[in-house]
Amino acid sequence: MDNWKDIWSRTRHLPNEDPDLQFLIDTDGFNSGAGKISEEAWSTYVRHAASLMNIQPDESLFEVGCGSGAFLYPFYKNGHQVSGIDYSPSLIEIASFVMPEMDFSILEATQVDPTRRFDIVLANSVFQYFPSLEYAEEVLRLMWEKTNRLLVLLDLNDIQFAEEALRIRKGSLSLGEYEKKYAGLEHLFYDRNFAEKALKGKRFTINISNQQIKSYGNNKFRYNVVIEKW
Ligand SMILES: C[S@@+](CC[C@H](N)C(=O)[O-])C[C@H]1O[C@@H](n2cnc3c(N)ncnc32)[C@H](O)[C@@H]1O
Image (cartoon, rainbow, N blue to C red; front, side):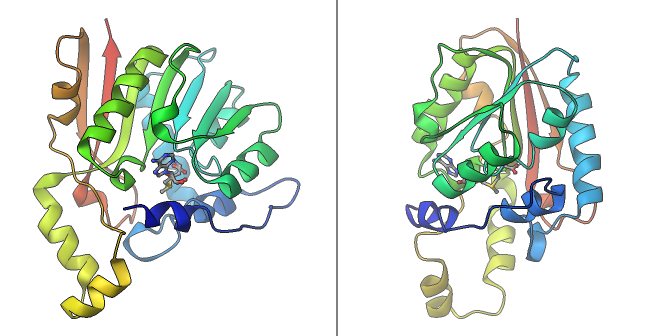
């Protein structure tokens, strides 16, 4: 699945001085097919996520796989301290450009520094690109160490719908055409108990809910997980 890294690391143009949110949403890949999301729908989604997290005005957020910062940007605009890592140099360049006082680094998800803690540590629509479940479990445990209060995984691929999602992705392509187009670009799917199992032995409350973004074709295949440390 290494080809994802090449795709996310393509060269990008820096936005205008005062970028609009739609630019970041599109840059982070929510701009075509079933994954397309409008600025209005995104803003409603971010407000929904904020209420799932019960975020307080002084709380800080750290995102693993933050991309150009589409998810973090509304929180930054609301005065929260935000920070993130991503393996794409071009996306980190944009995040650093649009949120200049904040700290963004080019790093693999497994390079999360657990010693610098944040109130909320999250990943929105990132875990499907990971190379294996073992990799995902390692990231999850680092995120657990890094958070003061909440560990949040948003837009996770639900394994119950793996076949259906694959069928839609394949569309009318023949097997040969599909393999050629998507070689090395598989998506990883997760059991709804994935996080609970990976954090076995730790003390937390977990809340799992269905994804709900207006007009998002992937809603049916995705779910959200909010884990609160005791
Ligand atoms: C769909 S985008 C989402 C970006 C951002 N989380 C958002 O909601 O706007 C997926 C992001 O995950 C990043 N990513 C995928 N696998 C990664 C990995 N193993 N380590 C670091 N970043 C990764 C990609 O570079 C990309 O920026």
